[in-house]
Image 1 (cartoon, one colour):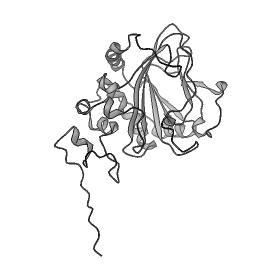
Image 2 (tube, helix red, strand yellow):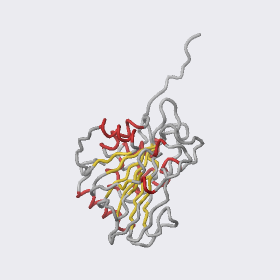
Image 3 (tube, one colour):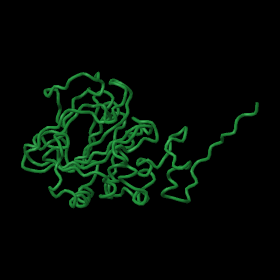
Image 4 (cartoon, one colour):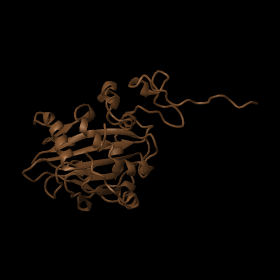
Length: 278
């Protein structure tokens, strides 16, 4: 799958990296075209019929969430492997990082704010904040994010907080951005979905990325099985988990590279395991 529907985005890499390091987040405005937004909305429409609201106040009782996106909406690949976001994430995470989660969130009028949280705490990792970066998240606005329609809220600098520091609502910043824009943020940044006090729905897509040695939040090998993964680019396949850590071989399947599951002709890389002569 190509990314011809994504607009070429010239970004100031140093500027965005500095903001993410200092504030925990940055925004790239209008990074995708209106035609791609329309295509994604069309592909998601069958799954957003108001029949499956959230199961708790985190998912949102007046929100709909669509999981396993690459198995349902193929155009989602243009967001997950968007060149501008991956250029930044390539600088923020070691190589062979993974797609940890990818979901659509359709927030309906009357939705209340989410609890404050950070994304890379989902695995109950035994390292308290502040600590090295374990993940990077993105949130794509497929509708304009406004002051009253449930725009994401963040607390600048909170990615550097100690684990027990409590969020204060008055410190929050609403992420206001036009449709087609993307918020990129450190996985330890405190954030939440805001209250939708408008009369319109607000749709967002959130691909989240993690270190290659961590378990993904969504079990991608089951959510996107080999026959479906085979339809996507090599980069998407790697993000799903069809890779191995280098150096090393974590991620193998039956002793061989997982890419063999979707490409029987894949040769992979060969190791020279011979020991030096005594």
